[in-house]
Length: 281
Length: 208
Ligand code: FES
Ligand SMILES: [Fe+2]
Image (cartoon, rainbow over all chains, first blue to last red):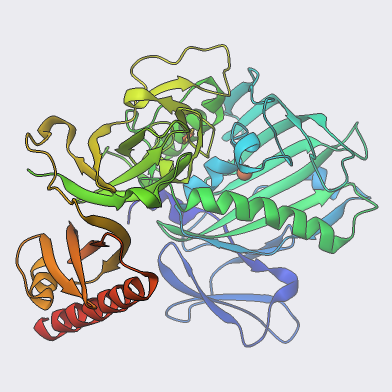
């Protein structure tokens, strides 16, 4: 399999509160899996041969692996702060590489054109310099001091603000976004993108949020995030090639793409290449 | 190589872009506000987004993903994330040769631009384009002709049917009908074209 190292990772496969004893079939890295629960509601994930796979329930989702992860699934300490609303957004099936889905989540330059008048608007298109690093101690990609003008940064935002962002990639198909919280400027809202790789060119995206927002209804918050993601899907299903090119030459990055450059470099270094293209076709 | 019919002019109004094909290559066919037609590779050099999803402003085509703006010769003129930057000459979309005559948009590889102009279609007006799952030979046989430029009658009206071969045993038919045909006649031609499509696709299935 392309990207053997990705077998030894944890992947989201469902929402913990929505499991059924009858279960449902899905795919993980091209292999058949089944997600169900026992009579106590505990998650059960099995492979194509009926063998039980390891399970972790965290961030409202069920996680599993086909291999032997060296590390526990990452944590998001901020999400445990009291007072946050935890939002299981649901899932969107996207016909794109799981890695392209994550890369798009790390990108701010598309806001004015893809999320017009919501997360961005012309003429506010400039991407200011920000900082990117691969943190060796935790083996994560981080982008900090990212800022961008947003007409409606969140469901709870009143009018335009200069939103501050931090991005974190703690696993090859997961990203955590820390974003200016309109309701509590001293805290960060947490918005995540958890991606289940079905195949190299299809994925199930499970966004999840931990927000300080006392006013918006759960339904409104879910709809807002789903609308954003449906806009992203129209991009993701129309990029050529479908696989994420890891070798330079195929695409032309600029300074605004520093997070993407670091993410690709980190993927390549670890052999996280399921959903990637190594030699320009 | 000859010119390949890729679209009807009426289907690419000013200020719009649409996907097209030349052989196995995906192209974007677009028309500027002033009416200039262009055919380019349907892939933005930045991150590979299809340019046919983009938007036209004035004489430029912009990519819908990050708004990179391209003009004459496929040259990138503006990167909105870096408004102060003049994009290097090397940032270019590959372009195709294109010409327009008698309401049809014809394309060719840039380095193999045909010397002869496209066939004349005087006396005919563009009607519609149909895509079908059959090889050009099968379509020509169903029409009762040969080659890619079929002339004859359909639905009691003189027509020209231009075949655009596509990969995977597909093709587009660009149909033109005699000038001045009334609406009822054009409806009959249209129905006859759909019958032709069914006949060719059925013949193809039987052959397979
Ligand atoms: S992919 Fe076209 S502008 Fe970024
Ligand atoms: Fe987006």
